[in-house]
Length: 349
Image (cartoon, rainbow, N blue to C red; front, side):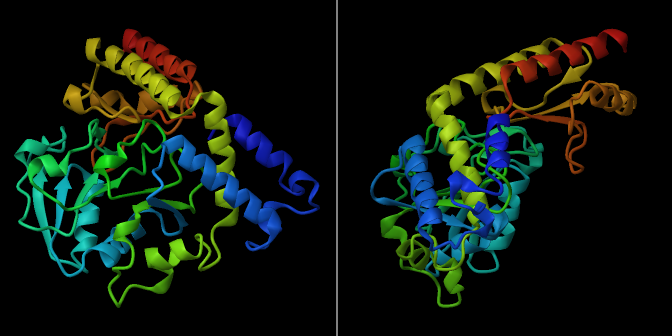
């Protein structure tokens, strides 16, 4: 999270705007928190240019819970199509199969999830309830940079995107999306808030077994307060949204993210020690996995990085290697510091 957001939250911890109480002490129906919520929602809609015919919901459970909540609301007894491009879309597929018939329209599992499958090659079912895509796979470092146009593929189903790990890092083409969801804990705020942006015509179709707290129509009707929402997480998200607006909004963040990713990938590509295996056209701007060609150096690499204040570089256990996550709050100088260390370690290896 941005340092100035954390500093503002710390300053307001026990007394928000001279109200005599901290946000965690507020009633979610009190005027103080309602004002926080309304500003947060308005800022989010502005940042993502959310159209008027979409609802913005602040829920709980994270992206993993949405893997169940989405089919409970949208499957309507029909088949659900999945594009499997990494670990997270694989988890989504497995969970949805508990509530709906699923169909894999495309998968890169056999190739080790090193690219995003081109939409022209998808094998969509005849009339799917929706098509699910994870647009940024954090573990494998694969990103879908251009949302597919399902109508151009002859499919009238809504596109559902899991944009958890790159939300607010780039604009969203809402003309191609029916529903987007994401956990907050990458670019928005602390874990605990789940963002859902859903087109109004998709509301009101939940299965009878769907818990009422997860029924999008009920959540929307009650302005995300059908049950007590994660108030402090919403407040922190709101501070982050205000920070993003001060930086110049999503367009500016995209410009910075392109520059950060290019700096790191350019170095990795010319290195004799490190390698990134993802197809260049599908590389993530947020999550950069890389490997040392001599893996006996891994422990020394991580120890040296820690000594330099470069933390959490160890790759996910399922794929190994290293991974640099360069979310919105990471400045270009932070990526330059990593590149400087990568160069220094290679020279000494």
